Length: 371
Image (tube, rainbow, N blue to C red):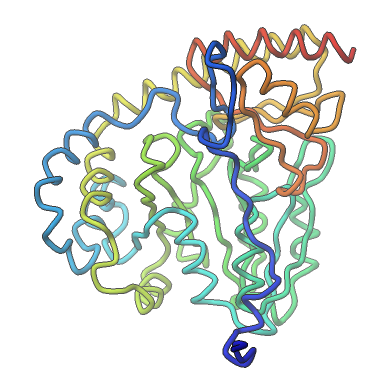
């Protein structure tokens, strides 16, 4: 018997979907080839030891329901930010991308519009389309992927509800200077919210880089999005959070479910917030390995962009699919990012010493084939 099509929401059919990178299980290589996954921006030294300790303590209690709300998590975040914000400024979620979906559900309906700036993270568009919203793309400007703030402001209509910026940006690794964010925020109309995705903020060291916090404290319509998947090394637990002025977050709490946050993820994430040594070690390794890779890229004459994150974007001399296959022959998983709005480009995550050595060797040999 055929299913009645009236049952299906047309907004959920044929819409853009996020295409994640390949997993290690997707790759089949000879046993003698060491595989390095440099395609998903994962932490090169693994999860926070304090998070692991917290997980071990909670494992015997997995038969017990978790907290009904995220209040303990929010109290921890309040303390992490030096009590500059209250618990009402925070909202916790099962990953940064889950928070993005919640934002779309909370603020978008059919006929609304969002503004993105490609190259950008695909779920911004995906979630908007599933709410029936229209996506307006004001691309980042070449050659340095700078933000077209005036273009964004000119594109705002009475139907615009959300504007997305990622700082540092994924997949380019570039960042938006504070003056540009100041200018954008200052000229936003009251019916528009700026979604400020700062999940890679630990890796940014530019003097004029800014978190979303100053704008939130100034009572602006800004929602910060954060994740525990990158610097904290908890990608497998899917934990995230956001902060905004209480008026926004208390409204968004209406779409939280009871027992929304799983007990293992919450305890590990709260412990990870205390592990400053792990963050410092992660950032130091990423910065050290990036410099080695920059040196190699310069020597082989590669086109690349200097990064404020834990990955580097390059434009190889061959198609991204060919380059991906070439690198895989040397045991290197890298990420083509045409679906992020950067056709012809490859994103390479920063790994540990062994991964960097393997990457440099592979880059030299692959580029020698084509240049």
